[in-house]
Image (cartoon, rainbow, N blue to C red; front, side, top):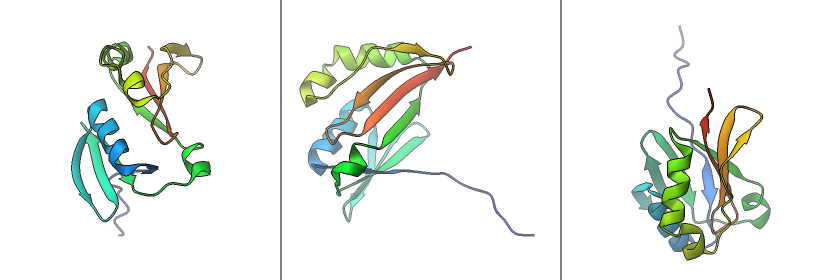
Length: 122
């Protein structure tokens, strides 16, 4: 019998300015576990992605990442308190309950990639 178990899935997130994006994600609380060959591996708990030193505007502006957290309001308050949007000149919306039973907010990274950070609603 074949072993068809999966281990994980990670997106390759584009970076217009790789060094700036690495600082941005570090400031968000992600740990950079490796960096080489134009790809940096970031994780936060069990969530991870690969930041690539590659940029295509159409890709970056149409890529959306979803980060599911336990307390979205705590995440938003922490990012606001630390001035992440102002420091990096990016857009961050207010948390809002969505009809698909998620409370989330949007945060756009320095390359134009949108992150929706949210929590499940009961």
